[in-house]
Length: 134
Image (cartoon, rainbow, N blue to C red):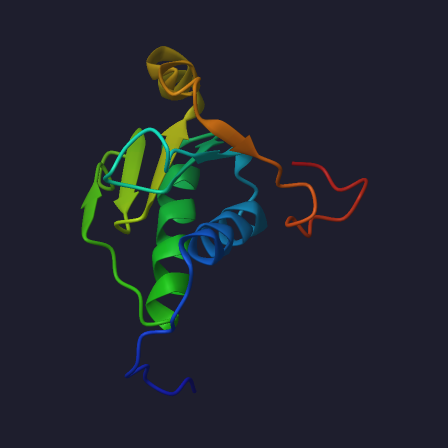
């Protein structure tokens, strides 16, 4: 049985974003993108954008990320869209995660809206084994 978490783990915004990304990747999130928006806005340092194949998968990714960060003592400032599972937004202050059902992601196209943001390479941070299907 896990010990209850009483203290918040001190993490940089990038470490927090990478924790979210690893958890989403473990849940087979598709097309993970990490955008550094720190030079473009004052309300966040990173946006994470990813997709699921169904509303149930989107909800599962969101649940897994929230659970992982909760275990680290980090709670979101806000959560939107979790019930519907079409577009779940997890607001961790300096890190904002957008989890889309794929057709909804294509419609809103956040990557184009934030095209001036630097895309952070995730290759070294993801642990999915070569040859494993998404």
